Every structure is written in C-alpha cells, then in structure tokens.
Image 1 (cartoon, rainbow, N blue to C red):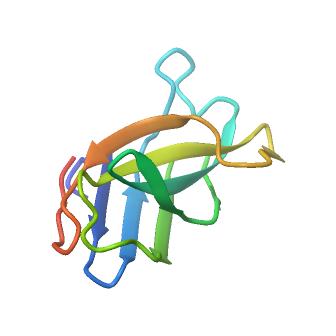
Image 2 (spheres, rainbow, N blue to C red; image 1 turned 45 degrees about the vertical axis):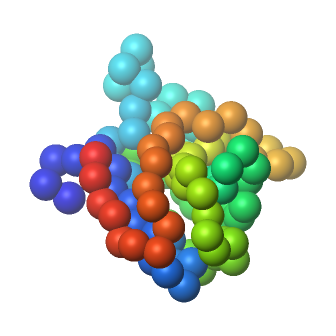
Length: 112
C-alpha cells in the first residue's frame, strides 16, 4: 500500500476492494471503540450497496473484498467507510461514515 491509509477500487462488474491500514483515532492511537467496519457505495445521493462488516485489528487494519450490485452509470460515486460495531456490539444497520472518497465507476481507481 506504500504508506497510504486506505486503497480502494471499484471495477466494472461491481467488485469492490478496500484495504485499510492504521485507521485510528488520533486522541487514543487505536481504533478506540470501533471494532468492525463496512463500506458503502453511494451513487448520486443514495447508498447503492453496502458490504458485510469486517473486524478491525487493534492497529486499525482490515480488508474488504466484495461483489456488489451497483447501477451503471453510477454518477458521483463515493465510497464510504462506515462504523459497523462498537466495543464488539454490532450496530443494527451501518452507522456513521468515518472516511469517504470519490471514484468513477466502470474504471479501476486507486488513491489515498
């Protein structure tokens, strides 16, 4: 990952890959109470798809590889990293987003 905090790609057929490294709360130096996360793909102003949740390591690392049903075209695509569990207790639905970035669907795009 070359020191990047997170890398993501969304391919034409809806394959999403997100690799998190060192997702921490600066005030405590760990992910704090956040124990699981998930990713949502937003098209326009609506969540189009969300992955299952995955555990975060104590260092704030996680990998998500999922196949999602995302409309094409997906205008104004945004990938959100969302809270899925705090202190080991899963949320009934994905919670607040804690990181976001835009990308263009139907092309593989990676950045920090």
